[in-house]
Amino acid sequence: MDILEIIKGRRSIRKYKSDPVPEEALRTVLEAVRWSPSWANTQCWEIVVVKDPKVKSELAETLPKGNPAVSSMMNAPVVLVLCGIKGLSGYYKGQASTEKGDWLMFDLGMATQNLCLAAHGLGLGTVVIGMFDHRKVAEILKTPQNLEVMAMTPLGYPATPGRAPKRKEVTSFVSYERFRR
Ligand SMILES: Cc1cc2nc3c(=O)[nH]c(=O)nc-3n(C[C@H](O)[C@H](O)[C@H](O)COP(=O)(O)O)c2cc1C
Image 1: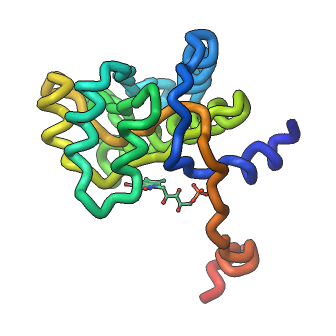
Image 2: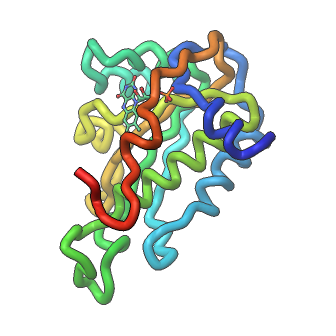
């Protein structure tokens, strides 16, 4: 597949079949994370793979009721929880290199996109979930203090194809030489 075709064809999937994700496919998706760019190659990501229905249901309960991805957390066979190690990305000898502080969220964003695209390339669906109680998820998964729980995504075969929300035109967000507005 052409790269733009893969990028444009990836959709947030909120309805999944119960078919299991083959181990080989899961490995490929995690390999895509491995090859993501990161600040000075710090690779601050940590991923928790959750298949146990009890744990998935505990995680699903951390989403507010109105989050459209609540049921996706239960009906997908796998949930991936993306975490970042704090104080690595954007730091040099323990000091923040820029006024932005920790670049963890940026690196996790890149890794997450790689994950979602690799999954899509294999016919698997994902939906990035950011709106949940991060502290509760850290408690459920028993993550250490130096980890920041950032996002989750169900992983599985789409039961229905997602619909593409409209995009802004390129001309509406690109300036040349100087910012134009
Ligand atoms: C950082 C981030 C957080 C998101 N959080 C949620 C969420 O909590 N629940 C949800 O249903 N979708 C969530 N989404 C999915 C977006 O709604 C979706 O990507 C957007 O509407 C564009 O649709 P598409 O992914 O199909 O292109 C999130 C996406 C991103 C990038």
